[in-house]
Length: 116
Image 1 (cartoon, rainbow, N blue to C red):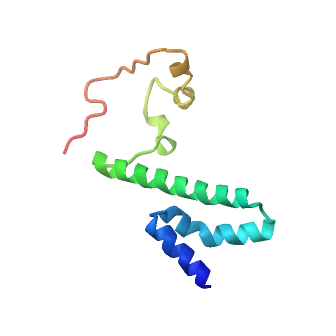
Image 2: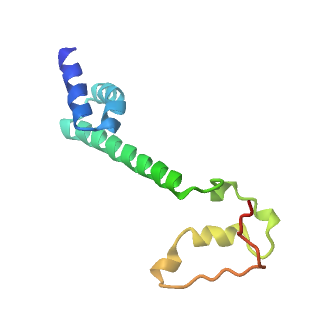
Image 3: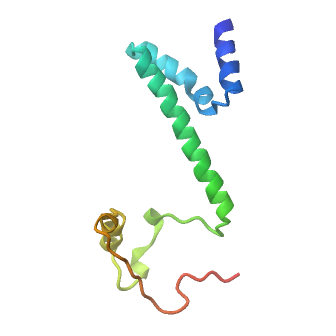
């Protein structure tokens, strides 16, 4: 167990928090699946990248100071006239970016304003 403690200390010194969080799970999975060293290393690096992406996302969301965080999968399309869930789903495929198309959304004044 001395080596395990040293590894954790080294990972902490290198600020690889994502690897520290997932190392036990990765070691157990590697032993049970008899993974190669490269596959094990890939698992650890993927865990670190996932951790950093999530941390950056959370930092950006906090910095944006949104009054309420909303996601498209919780939006109630029945309350809006003129745009269907299928239309939004097509926009979320981002084919309009590949085709270099513009998107214009029109609505009555006051749509999207947030009153305090």
